[in-house]
Length: 183
Ligand SMILES: CC(C)(COP(=O)(O)OP(=O)(O)OC[C@H]1O[C@@H](n2cnc3c(N)ncnc32)[C@H](O)[C@@H]1OP(=O)(O)O)[C@@H](O)C(=O)NCCC(=O)NCCS
Image (tube, rainbow, N blue to C red; front, top):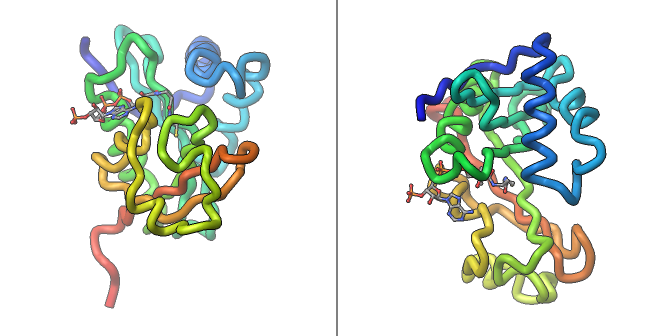
């Protein structure tokens, strides 16, 4: 499978529709009935969107928006077709996004990775109690993507307890994408 990773062609209607289909596939609970609207938001001016193509078709998508001026960008969303996973496409999308954010002044790339379906040991517990010990001792119970991000250099920097309902936290992760701190 030959993969090309490049900035999203915003004016290409077919690619937009394929991106919407991808979002609906990966996040049916969030975008099942509003994926095209979400694509319009992801491709809005000022944001970054990068796609992965295979045979000219969208197999992956990642986006980011500036959150603190241009120094910190929030990654949202990241999706790879189920049939194309575990072949390095997610990692390539992250690398391309990091390069693009860095070019625009980004120092930090951060993201929230929800744990709505009891996929980690941070779910179904009171995260106001022993918060940091629980974060340090996190274990993956069911393929939660936090480990994918850790392999790409992202660290868990916090949690939002109960973000998606009691015992369903958001896990916050971040990576320094600037090559070094200025003195
Ligand atoms: C998470 C996702 C983007 C990963 O994409 P991918 O193309 O399969 O990832 P890669 O092939 O680049 O994987 C890189 C490494 O991460 C690991 N990895 C990937 N997904 C993982 C997961 N869910 N849990 C644990 N490890 C994972 C891979 O095994 C690989 O490890 P290795 O280098 O030791 O072999 C993809 O699974 C996906 O789209 N999932 C559904 C949507 C989603 O959860 N998005 C993120 C929301 S925050």
